[in-house]
Length: 323
Image (tube, rainbow, N blue to C red; front, top):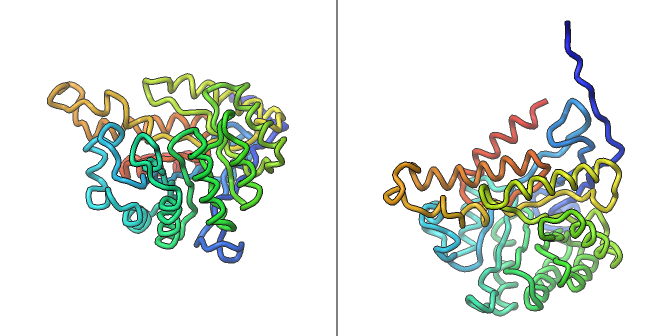
């Protein structure tokens, strides 16, 4: 006797957000990327439409990254470009076929290099001249300087459709104004909480930020370090969105690499824990598996680091997008 599975249809739909502007669209990018648009649970092609492939961005720091965040097993993939974000961007685009770049201004952090905002903007301009893919501009963390930096990047890149990461409940007004004025997208970051995620979206839209310019960052927990909590919150947000909640229907972004590569299991050398196997292979798998789980919870945009992990996840996306 044949088994007929019950199918679920949803009244809601995830909003589409466009990253980057081509020449025809008033920018200078060779391509633009649209994320979102699905009206079914992740990769449930049999229940609805999943029209857009999840995208992956390579994270590139503006200064040489510290060993505490970028262990040698990760740095080895970029050994010749660690101090040059422009060469780094060219490398991932030309060698690894990157479709998106995430420029992370860790150097602007007052507790690190305290790089001036004007110098950071010059780096962004040079990167955008060197590569033609859409760009995400990621700050160093919440604070007034961070907001000023991202707003200035938006001003100097007006019309390019860059994405600013991130606005938080304590610092969002400057970035909301920049998003409206300079045709940007804005990442709304909330601390792994359904209600706080919705509240921030409401605050941004109350300031007239178009909902189709907002991308949600529910805050990512690495594999073994809160990942299951992130998964659960993302799942609940997605169910509310598909159920018709307009303030939860923005696509997801997850900063995967920075969470995966700071875990103890990734950093401990094989000599200390021989039963754990190769440190490099362990790190690549830790990042890839974290990313894979986030895809299944609804992620539309992953920010990753190691090329081997990216390649593995791209292959998985190929399989998941096959109807």
